[in-house]
Image (cartoon, rainbow, N blue to C red; front, side, top):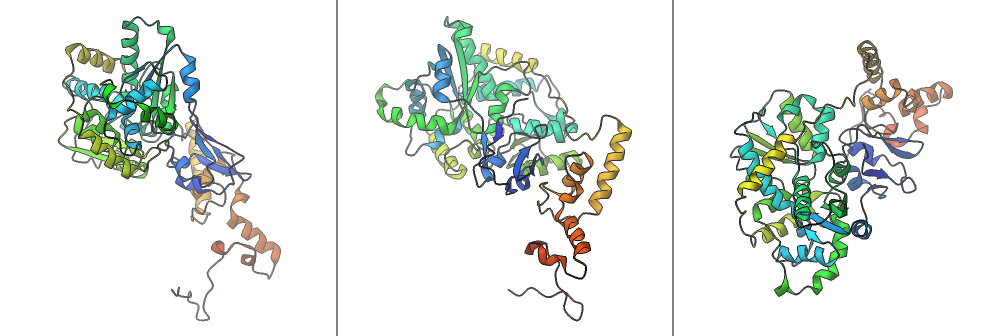
Length: 446
């Protein structure tokens, strides 16, 4: 699997900020540089957002190079794109701007979201999914479930995203218009790194349906000048309805699905807490759960320009100018239903498996637990691992040495120093608290 999250080692200073923020503990710092464990990465983009040195980036296609790769190119924009612009009152300006910069056609993922929501309501009448049903719209959440919550795979709805559905329908429309299939290039315009990864590694489809992914921030820069030059009276009516546009923020998908009892959760930490509750049997009183790894949904993606709170305000204003979603045709409903039936359930990824041999795995687990008990449990990150548990696992699995722990260094220094206090050689946060003559700890004075 080719991940889109990558490190620029020249910029990395080994500050350990990323290892403390990664929700799957997929990052380590070794020899002064961060490194990513690829089998644990879910491409959520959290490390991209928190890195103070911009050493983590998302690999994506260049806009100009994408337009030159195929004779006929189609843009599939996420509705999050519309919320990045100041003083915008018509979505059609953005969509016509995409044609102005070189795309031959535009197919909104918001339009396919409306089709998907309608088809899912019909699909559920003939199929059974464990309740609460979990949305598969966020690729980072789907991969998180695959590696950390495999018992919840049965709760996932058919795994196809609005972007993927839009790509299939857009390609079919171009072929029906007489464009040779080999000339067609379909590119998504996405807000986050997980959707970039999903282009080459779709979760529920047998093969990829997109030819590349462009970051919203890159397309935003390309659109600024062409949008200013457009004649407002000569715009092509390309925009869909408000229902699909609402998928950009948390809760929008659930509203389009017409689920009365739903829960919308955004932010990867909150998503993990919700999944843990479901896994533990504390089922929420809901039929449908919408999970988004980014704050405020796709509006909080790491490849956006605007902050999610301002973007949500703008998008809601734009949605007020859009018509309600149009009822799908019988043919469209039949096509989407057939696509849902052809999707595959994601499989469990044994990322955290210690060893294929169960006996050896149990031995390693016991060794990890014994070592963890001897560690301070401070989650300081000085060893290059995000927690003492992760460090103990690294040691047992041969990825680190027990001497990498700073407290083990202190014990060794204490032995070497004799009567000298080894704490004098350690940074202040790791020194022992001094005791008063009465044997009580000194009280902190504000």
